[in-house]
Length: 397
Ligand SMILES: *[C@@H]1O[C@H](CO)[C@@H](O)[C@H](O)[C@H]1NC(C)=O
Ligand SMILES: *[C@@H]1O[C@H](CO)[C@@H](O)[C@H](O)[C@H]1NC(C)=O
Image 1 (cartoon, rainbow, N blue to C red):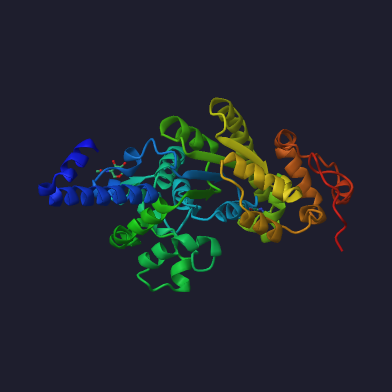
Image 2: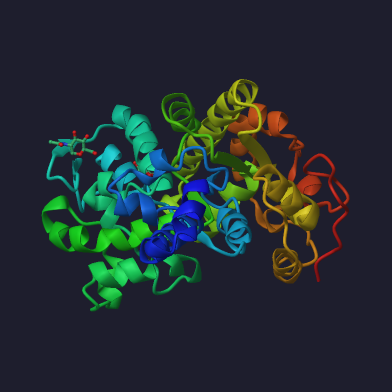
């Protein structure tokens, strides 16, 4: 500043003085712009923005919602997504999960990365690859994903919460989105248009980078992958919400929708009960260990508590991610939660399903604070609690 003052005091240097001031103003604006937009300056200088801005405390928070089918996970993620400037990606492990099981007749185990590398995926590789994939998603490194995952940005047309990747989806569909295009999105790698993806993925990267909060919801993410994610990668801005629900309610939902043919086949139902409760148990145990090792990283939530005390629980969630709960989010929660009713599973679960669930989920129920109900009469009785801190439900007309 002293030198600048000296130059400017000298009349002969008036142009130099003006030039220096102009350069300073431009630089200052650029830096300010970059600070506001997180990445622009780093990109102009060809640096990895995350390295360049490492000490920046405004680094956006990334929230992973680890849930299961029928746990109210979409609702939970929607509540987080209400925060202005958020970006939401959902079920981005679907393609890899299907491939790792090799079960889907429509495509095999082969996956392909954007750089052309192909490999076969086996069940044992899934936990590792899921961690790698989630790491790349939350850090906006979409170019490291496999093309199946990048191709599976389905449903943005029909579901409101896919709005944020709508632009990308239209791009990979080349503007020609049909019902068929949306429906049949699990394609074998040979049929995926990777050139088109190559062209379009920067849109996702841009959306991801400019968001102040990223919400990533999965029903196929295991806590074992979260463990790798925390151990192996830089994760200072990462928060994990583990959402659980009474397995009796989850399985009853499955039955009512007859998913995986479990409604009229007890063997299938039993397999499903074992699988769901086994997975939730494992996730809960590992989750509790990780809570010790990484304090403040993982929050466990029961869907029932969200229904019992929506505002309290949503506040807890926002406190956990260290973002102030805004009035608009509160309003959204108040408008979208209805007065609690007697849980519908207790009105229709059949005795055989109840018994099988109790057999395979007993330890889990106790661990998560769900109350064992011994027979159908008890199940139907509204005055009997099914979870700890149960509120009395009004009779449903
Ligand atoms: C291609 O990308 C994958 C995933 O990012 C990576 O593991 C692999 O090493 C890359 N292959 C080449 C040849 O760079
Ligand atoms: C239930 O489904 C399995 C295949 O998932 C099949 O092998 C079995 O025969 C079915 N049982 C009945 C009673 O239909």
